[in-house]
Amino acid sequence: MKKNIILGLFASMAMLVSAQQIQMQQAPRAMASQATAEETLSMEYGYCGTMTSQIGWGVAGTIRAVIEVPQEVAAKYQGAQITRVLAGMGNDGGSDTKIIIMRTLNDAELLYSQKTKFVAKEWNEVDLETPFTIDGEGFFIGYEVTVTSEKSYPVGVDSEVPSPYGDICAMYDTEKKEWVWEHLSEYDFGNNCIKFILSGDNLPRHNLALQSVTAKEYVKMGEPFAIKGVVKNLAALTAEKFEVSYKIGDNEAVVNTFEATIASGETATFTIENIVVEQDGAYDFTVEVVSVNGNEDEDYSDNSFTYTINSMSNLVPRKVLIEEFSTTQCGNCPRVHTVMGEILEGRDDLAIVVHHTGYGQDNYTISASRSYLNFYESSTYAPALMLDRTNLADQGAEGYDPTAGSCPAPGPVFAPSSKKEIERYIDYCMAQPAFVTVNIEDTYNPETRELTVRVYGESVIELPQTPYLNIFITESGMVNYQAGGGNDYVHNHAIRAVLTNTWGDELEMTNLQYDETRTYTLDKKWNPDNMNVIAFIAHYDGTNMNNCNVYNTEHKDLDYDSSAAKIGNDKVSVWAANGMIYIAGSYEQAEVFAIDGCLVAKTHNATAIDVENNGIYVVRVDGNSYKVVL
Image 1 (tube, rainbow, N blue to C red):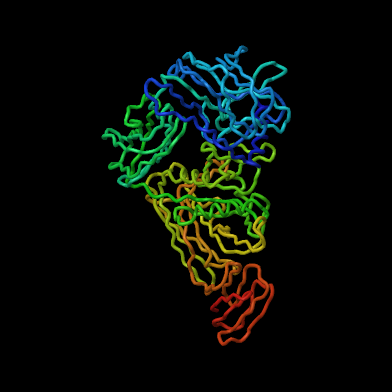
Image 2: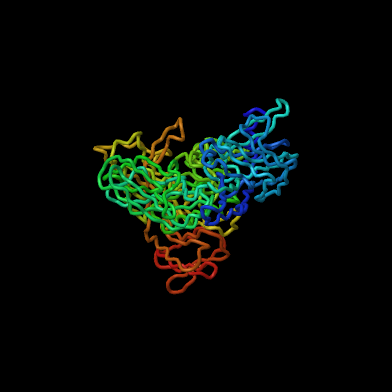
């Protein structure tokens, strides 16, 4: 089977996974005893985490999924025996199934083969009839399975960053009579859910691998920051305590001790806080696992991670711009609205705007939002997100193509799958350096409804690409229909207008400083008490939407008293301006009373009520009272 055909089949599979993501239980961990030197040890080996997805080729045939144990690893375990194989299966356990071990992927002769049966959507534990002894040479281990339906997706995978040793699959080409091998990482999938249990008296007892470190590349001089890391236990004994050090340049290493229970094959996270760089400059920053259970780590080849950290005294705080694509026809969008509300709660470092495009359009759609569909760089869909107009495909963000299903996001827009994933992408964007400040001042005249916005700031360096100023105004609290949410759904953060050009106004800085003012007259139906102004500096490249990254963002509520004192519920919004009383939302009856209690007006469905005289009025909407002042 040709590679381009396989790509299409993998992509069609991804559409299924996107439609119904599966969650399966983690395989039972091998319990390694705290053995003495004379006792036999056992440990788990593999590259996968929790099984979350399933893959297949979309056709009937025979499939192999394996992981590689390279020679340098096999040499460490020489003499140990593989006694059990763990295989996580997708939606089809298949037939003619067998555990296989081979020296190379192209070998006609297998080192080991054992027939077995697999149960779909479960981890399967297979004890080897004859334990396989590792001879010190590299090998591949996994399973072979035959499926008879194009809807079979037998290979269970995780959603972790794929290892080049843990993501190997093949389908047998009956015409060429050969196996066509592929790495799942080529199609943005994780690792095969394959593990095995090793037994022997020469297995490592204390060995933690430093799998990853998450840290900022740019930090502000003198201000504390934190790093996060992930360690994996590659030894037979459970790790109860471990030490991790960090070193900045030529300074003395600082050691931190962590207590955890990490069984063989399991991972754990750690966080080191209050790290400070005292001087500006670029430094080597090294993180290293020092010891396990009070003993030296037995394999230092996978213990350390070094990168360059840049300390700058004039680095400015970053706020992340979140742009959501959602429409009232989108039945899945309320789920993402809820998640975003949870993420935004209590945070001032995130600014959000909702473009009512991506899945049709509605009454809140504006022309600029239609132009921003270019950020998809492919077919449009909703719900969708964009963070700082940055392509996050290399961080794992996926887009969606109706003909191919899920795929690495071709543009900055991606399909959100979970709160954890969104927060991870936000953390990534937050870690990027911000070299320009953004400040907002605004004034509002309730009589003329004229809004004046001043945006000013300075850049701490010459920006690498031409900066453009963008100013949005958004509104919240609008009650309207929403698929999946009903007729009384409250719409928040909807973009109402762009006060600059659609793609921003080019900034001309003087001595790295800028100061710009824009005015705009608010529509009489908009409630300024529920409005927000968002200003951000970004680059714009009309030939490459992946080259339009945001430098920095600021946002501010238009917290003006427009004479709308609300007492009641959130089903409607009531305010007064320019001799009119406005009611937004779904209601049955509204009555307007003068301050002396006289009934002035009564309506059942009007959105605007003309009141003859200025004064204080009480608007009663379905029994809830609102005081307004004309």
